[in-house]
Amino acid sequence: MSKLDQEKDAFVKSIEGFKQTLEKIKKFHKLEDATVFSQDAWKLQEAIGLAQEKVQQFNEREGLFNQPKSEYPDLEEVSNSFKPFFELLDIASQFEVNYKDWTQ
Image (cartoon, rainbow, N blue to C red; front, side, top):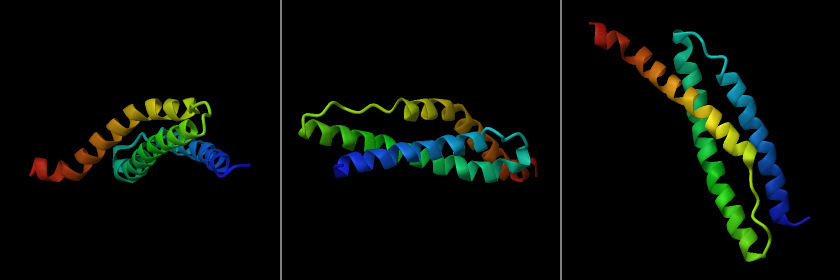
């Protein structure tokens, strides 16, 4: 198996990890937990961004070898599902951090 294929297999497994993290983040329901969940959300946001860059790198390498470009619909699904949760947690975390300053 080529190095590219091995990297793509490992990449697909990492997307499964993103799904698990997203499921954990979906359990957010208490404002006092916003900071903790926000940390996970920021990490996932960064990981998704890096993963999207990696897809571009895979596609460039596949183009060099005249292979069809790989698509990762699971990554797009996780990214799209995650967006509203990320925004909610970011706002909730900012509120939690700044609430005392705003009310005093």
